[in-house]
Length: 226
Image 1: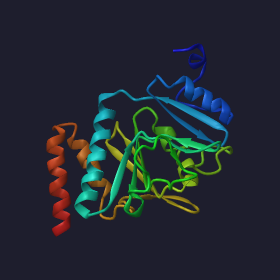
Image 2: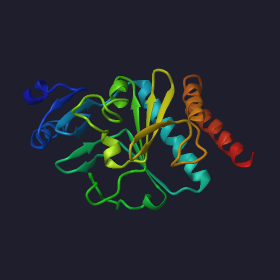
Image 3: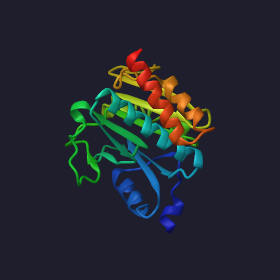
């Protein structure tokens, strides 16, 4: 790691110009790190490496994709992809989904998704183990006077979930013009209840992911025909 990198704090928001942010992420190209920029502040997160984080990441992607497929909802999921409004905002959520008419709006070969050119994802998901407070704070809602509204709200994301790895819990919010509200069922994927996803996460602590997947399939099909 370079001297510049070691001087930069990680997992916290610090004051920085867009140019300083670009330099910081250039220095981190060889590192497995996530980066965010919002209202003159940047945050660098070293990539989570925990076993539990990785498992929950896979379970959530599988569950959302399976549900969309069974419901006939067009969906394109993205893993740790950078979304950017140059000079203004930058984010790299763990998971993002483009749904329905947006599912095929980003062409193959795209690197960083330019939000000045393409629409924002309908759904953003952060898998949180060590960054939970920030995922529930600056990335979503007011934390200090510097952050008058949230990064994802300002981007226009319709729905935002935070997966609490430690407690196998999902804190989900629907975004609105005047802020956000807690939800127990997805609005962008109607019929997908948070308690079903939470139960899948809990089961993944005891059984393998193939068995969790089979259980999810039975739950989704049961709700379809009940």
